[in-house]
Image (tube, rainbow, N blue to C red; front, top):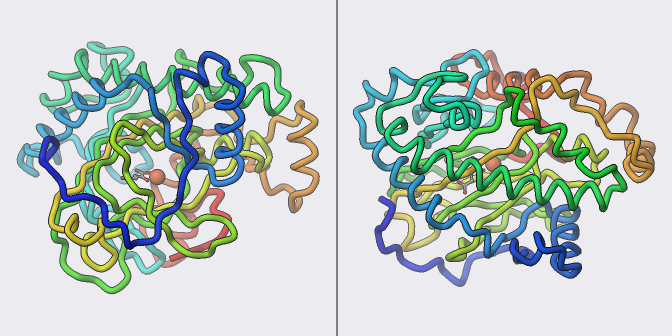
Length: 356
Ligand SMILES: O=C(O)CCC(=O)C(=O)O
Ligand SMILES: [Fe+2]
């Protein structure tokens, strides 16, 4: 549960050192921080973000998540997201595949749409359990707004670095058009039964543009380019983890990197060692494009056009809008829609390589 004192992350497991970006400095235009962000976003696609000013909102969201997960399964199932390619609402553990074999996942989520947080108390996309409603004003909306602000600051920097007119990326993420943007609280039980090669959240790239992640316990791993091995991302107190999702990779013609990552289970590949006995909680806000926005490179930038020209033909021209891209990925992850390994393949995004 949030608030529990956790054993430290072990120092003898392979970790990836992430660039630390100071949000306050970056927002104020500090050149070194901006360069650090650009390096991280283009090389690994993951970085730590400190001084983001969202600690209170994060704590309140973890409380909302704990209260929601404590409801009976029956009650939570009244708000389940379903199998039609929509992710808002509750997701029960075991509803999605973590690999091509159809191995079920082990985590439950509550996903609250940005559109509902902004329109509250009027429902925009769906309704939620009373535990979410009770904290919509005090937790969900403030956390959502903070996350949006952080995403827009990063987008402004990416516009400049990519040679795009100011405001280009923000305009692809308008607040007045429905989108897949959402806040997610995730719970994974402690002491999961041993399984030789299983992730609790399978290897994936994120669907949207920017993810703003908060976790307390190890378990998150990335597959860094050139290393060809899974490495843990060590949670650091007071530091969020940010990462690039598929939409920014597509918009930038591959310049911004949406890296493959997963969450591993607590015993075989632990939230390691002594941490394995504990429930694992994490919280993410996913900023995703407006649903009508085409998933295609912004070739008005010469830099993007050059990158696209070097990529295999059509690699970044998906031919679909963000709404369809998102629905396809969600839908084919659901085990109820599984026909075979081809369903797993149909759930993939810009993954650089298939890793199981
Ligand atoms: O829980 C984590 O640390 C990562 C979660 C994640 O990758 C996701 O929800 O997309
Ligand atoms: Fe993710």
